[in-house]
Amino acid sequence: MNKAELMSAVNAALDGNWDASHNIAQIYSDNAANWLHAVLHKIEGDTWNSQYWYARTTGHTYEDFTDVMQELIAIKHSLK
Image (cartoon, rainbow, N blue to C red; front, side):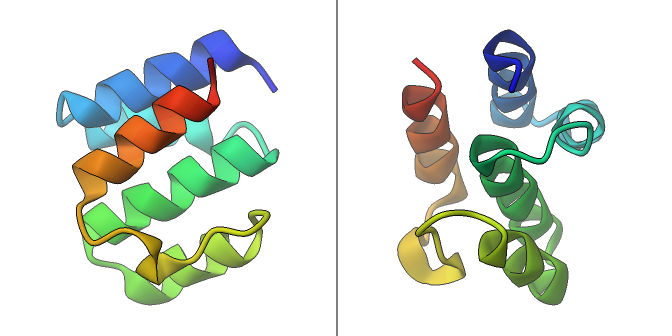
């Protein structure tokens, strides 16, 4: 995992830059990257794909957060 790049991806998502964030997230396959990838597809409205990526995380589910911005902040805190 590259925490600096994933932090950059989270910040891009928080700024509304879905494509930049997704381009980084899909490079990695660790828990944090998979969680971010899941949230990005939740933002996109692709529930099936989002749930697929949640299934690849450790302990995170689609239903854990109703506010994607709060979830992105939670991912950001997990990277510190």
